[in-house]
Amino acid sequence: MKMRMTPALVLLCAIPLAGCDTDDDAGTTEAPVTAEAMQPALDHFSAERLLQRIEVLSHDSMEGRAPGTAGEERTVRYLENEFRAMGLSPGNPDGTYVQQVPLVEITPRVSASLTVNGQATELQGVSDYIASSRRVAPEVMVEDSDLVFVGYGIVAPEYDWDDYKDVDVSGKTIVMLVNDPGYATQDEALFRGNAMTYYGRWTYKYEIAAEKGAAAAIVIHETGPAGYPFEVLSSGHERPNFDIQSPDNNMSAVAVQAWMPEPAIRRFLSEMGHDFDELKQAALQRDFRPVELGGQASFELQQQFREIQSRNVIAKLEGGARADEYVVYTAHWDHLGIAAPVDGDSIYNGALDNASGTATIVEIAEAFTRLDHRPERSILFLAVTAEERGLLGAKYYAENPLYPLARTVANINVDGINQWGRTEDIVVVGRGNSTLDDVLAEAAATQGRRLEADPEPEKGFYYRSDHFEFAKQGVPALYIDAGTHFMDRDAGYGQQKRDEYTTNDYHKPSDIVKPDWDLSGAIEDARILFQVGYRVAQRAAFPEWAPQAEFRATREAMLRENRP
Image 1 (cartoon, rainbow, N blue to C red):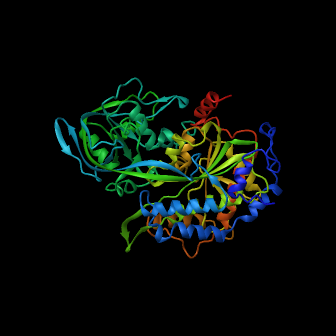
Image 2: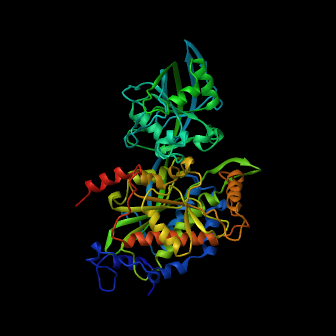
Image 3: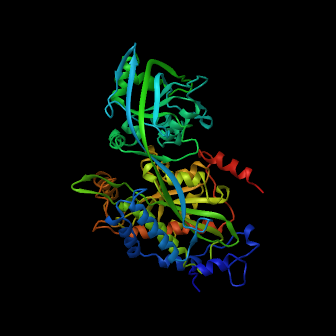
């Protein structure tokens, strides 16, 4: 019979009884992966049902699904009801479908100045800089902090790279280039060449600044290396920031996180007697040492706070012989809520971003319940909050996991889907990072499809969605994007549609379900992602990071520490 997971059956199969699919000896053996075993699940996928779920999640009544709003309440209730109706167990061991995520909304009023040769100049917000603080404090002050240029601000032993050398930057304001030396040189032998590493992400740069004891950190914005124009950052300058409420009120974070656009930094460096291009060139050398710039920076932030109890939604399909090991599907349920109107519309519905991804993991969850026999490992379906605010829901789970990360074998993330039809390929964001690529290739081959690498690796998309928080903790993580070679379409069709969405709809109220959506390709992708999770759940071996992956050492240390 089909395994329709009613609550009663979930409870019964948690206990080794005759008739339930358990095998005490199977924990050390390879469980079979056959087309016949997967077929009931694969047959269940429906483009029509997927579209209906997207329409519900992106409906105006959800008010843009912002954390801490009525839209969150409705979204969480809808997801709980969906998981409950298909017979999945509550994913939280406390018997609920939610994990509480304590957030804080921080609204700052910022002023800043730069002192050169004893002369202080007030900086102009947006045109000269943007700044914020993660610290939950009513006032954050940095006064007359010496400015130091630290190149790319990277300490990467595996690449034999240390921009700080033995220079003490505690109490100082460090100034850093965005991205990493590989991108700047396009040298495949340096870092990863054109492909951004995590060391190139601004999040890493602020983290290392805190570790080094800097008072403030300024990242220099250049559109090419950053992967987006400065307006992407400055457009949200007046909006409140969100962060996780930590026990130390984030006082361990660097006090001020700032960006400066390239034209402004060129001007300021010139006033201090430095040439921006010469400093950039010097930063490409392994023997680079920090440069005292001869100026001082001051920042003052007056901040107001609002505490928010947001929620991750989690459901569980109990596994068989290896039920205490886990495959996790993730998608973020949140979007931007109600904000500044565009053409009279103030609801940011987020149909593609990410009602579509959330609906997809719900569709995959329902497919798993149609299997005749449960998979060997348990499957978790995790819809996370506050991705749009900095991957906060995923970060909170990864730092406060409900199930041990040492026994979490893989994360499969869905952030946006293909809404334009069938493709011959699947794009792997961060291709080559882990052996999950091999499993994905096997699944894609069942549809006669191939894998393609991310066409824009320099933009660091692998570090910009929820799977990254799992990867950062060491869990191998897979993230795909829509294929680019569309069937029965001209060669440039895929890029044209991507550009149209980015220009016209991304983070705008116009991100709604469109009449021309064709989810036939999305359903094929969903079937492949189902297969990846199922195949990983059946195999005895854990997926592994590639030798060059930044997260391999973290994973290996985790597994050593938790070895029986």
